[in-house]
Image (tube, rainbow, N blue to C red; front, side, top):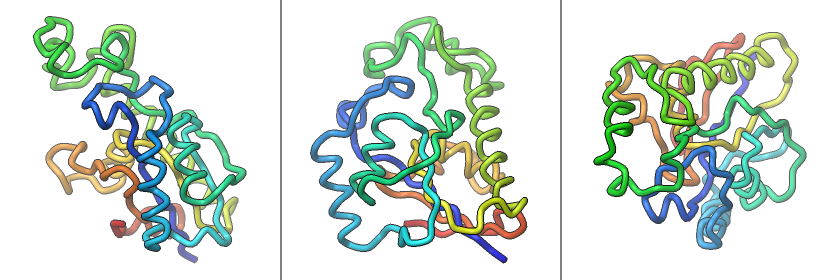
Length: 199
């Protein structure tokens, strides 16, 4: 029997609006971001919640997005699906940090093993997200979940999640990043993702 896991990126925040590097900063949705999600929900783009299990990264903007779309829902927190930790670069615009040597060294590492000062490396982030994806899929492979799943998380997380499940589709994993409030529906058979649709 097949199941679906729906990955939804949270709505717009001040970080989105202002072009800031942010991930580990636990900032809320903008009021306009919450309203945009409600409008998308009214337009019917989201999966029907009936018979679904809910998951989130536990971060404020993800939980607020869940509530904006579906109302208050009991959900399972998955810390592996928290956004990337940018360390000392958190909540700073690219123009402000692009000239810093520490920033250039961080983004120049093609293996992704250099951490942002005080934060994560891209490689460590990917390993963390892949572990979360594997744990989530194992719930369906083992029959633990008899219902579809709805996951409210983050753009970077969704990118790593999708690149892991569908390697080679894009030459850069961040090309998977959906717009705020959008995402992917994964079709799961025996714990494996067979294909996906976009919403």
